[in-house]
Length: 376
Image (cartoon, rainbow, N blue to C red):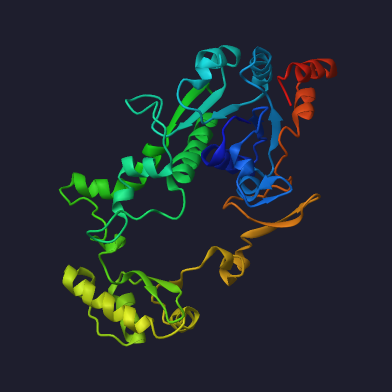
């Protein structure tokens, strides 16, 4: 797999495929390379986010704006199954690397293009970021307090789930088909797919998913987050009457089996009662007490608490990558079978000579390409 992408969506896609067994070669420009390299915190010149997303990959630096760089990529292309890119529509074509040129050189190639809005439509050329794709998909409007502003998610859902994961799914399906194709992955459409159940409700005459008004987005007291006595939070998911009833008994408030479908005024009353009750003791004390009651309550873990949690430790969700330069690093496993990557994230252009030589480019040609500025 050749990965021409930068930042999050493409890197996450190629990481997923790499952890599933793909050999990923990251093609970077000869200038600064992937912008994510520069995002702090850094260790020995590599940003932490870049490192986590690009472990196990190799880096080749090619200037695709130069004719020699373009010809070099076309020369390498037949040896690979997939070319992944995240430029705006038309950029590859302006470089002389559009679908027609690539397909002519490699008829079985899978070209996967991840963009904000897709290769067609009036928004195809617009710039955007995760928040914009969430907004246009309808997902952003669904979160937040009733009558208030939409709440910004804490992670980049459109980039990672709407773009990276959907790209990986479609690449795997295309590999199974075994035919050359150009995959058009829109992050907006990918994240919109997460609204499918509620769009189904709308089709059947239901109401739109208004923020703070439905059972699963803030409208029900038994499904939400509550501040505890130590300033931390618990997540309550007591949807079914048996869970709700058990929770009410444990915390000492009055509740009934009809509460899950009670009107908004009653939900506000219950939310206030539950908030006062849970605000008496620390988070971990509540979680220890409520665990045996089986009422769907868990701690809201901060990121620096994840690795030590007994569930995550038992499942081995973090592993140690032994980097010769940076020492042992604790990294998150992806939820796939097999061993995670043990090769460190690459330095910019670290594997240029190695990859080119393996593909039949001679030492003399490599020297000439370097002298021309076509590689680094």
